[in-house]
Length: 221
Image 1 (cartoon, rainbow, N blue to C red):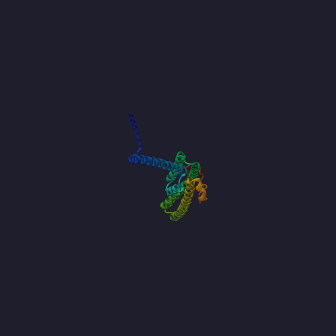
Image 2 (image 1 turned 30 degrees about the vertical axis):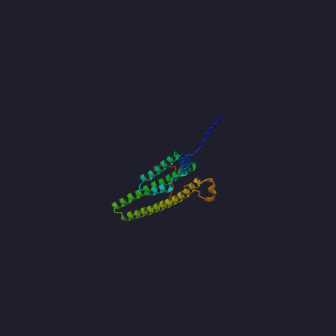
Image 3 (image 1 turned 120 degrees about the horizontal axis):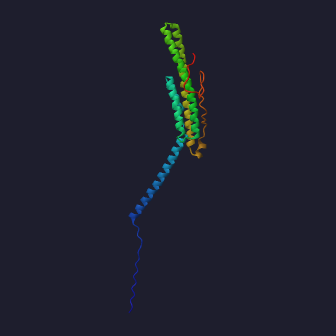
């Protein structure tokens, strides 16, 4: 009698719940890492655009110039705005921001040189007033004092007007920078006119060329 023995081993694949959970967690971590990298790249790109579009604050330098009490302090403001514009040039700023910075430099040079001239006139008047008092020419001293006070008031009113004008221009520039940072498909939805124009601040008494040197010779009264 022949006996045939059939030995069939069937091995089924059994999923390990613990192993599956580890793989799932690993996949989630990879996805989080990808999303994080995308977010970082997006933020870096946005920060780069903000840096390129960001210009100099006209109000900051106009306020510094308004606060200057001597010709030397006014000259320092001119040097500061020149240095800031030069730094902006090498910071990767956009051509528009650099052009606006150069216009601001020209405006601060013009207003700064004008203030240097006015301050020197005021200093000369003050010296004349002291000389008249020393010589007991009281009426002359009083007239000089009135003239000096009027010149100072006129100058300070114009300086505050320049600061207010610069603050308005800064707000307009900030609106323009926000538009440049917006996605192209959103610009049409929020289009406003924010044309900055040149920094042509009005003068109430005289003018000095924007490219003139900081040092100013004595001016006749």
